Picture 1 (cartoon, rainbow, N blue to C red):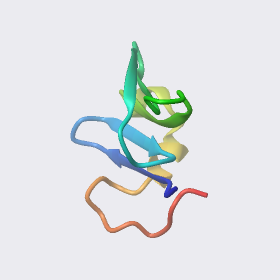
Picture 2: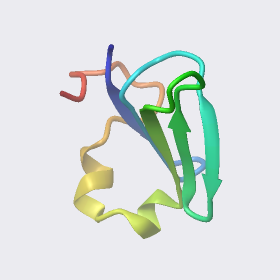
Picture 3: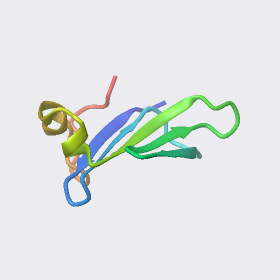
Length: 74
């Protein structure tokens, strides 16, 4: 299981992923919760309008989408 996160300023979306693979997305007004289709465990979040929802320090700490990752989320 490899975790990663990034922020895409072009669409103002933060992605926090705990696990890669097939997921079922549950849509909410603020974004998506992604769960495993078999057992429903949490696989990640997609946060829309991240710069308006998340603290500025958190958005700034996320690597930009498409940039080379410096470290995985532990």
